[in-house]
Image (cartoon, rainbow, N blue to C red; front, side):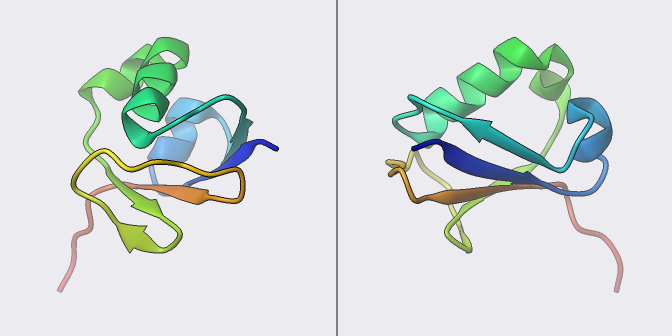
Length: 77
């Protein structure tokens, strides 16, 4: 079963959509590598990753039912 990746903000312009389904992705480091390979512009983009609604700061194992969100930097007040 593929991993569901939800894309938000200006990142949707880079990926040309707001959702991706990817298979054979073991962890978030592998996900970032695959996304950078497919979308080289992402390499220079800043964004946070959330797995199952929890923002992460370290490599995280992904399961078949994981939902990943790519979140651009937040601004406002």
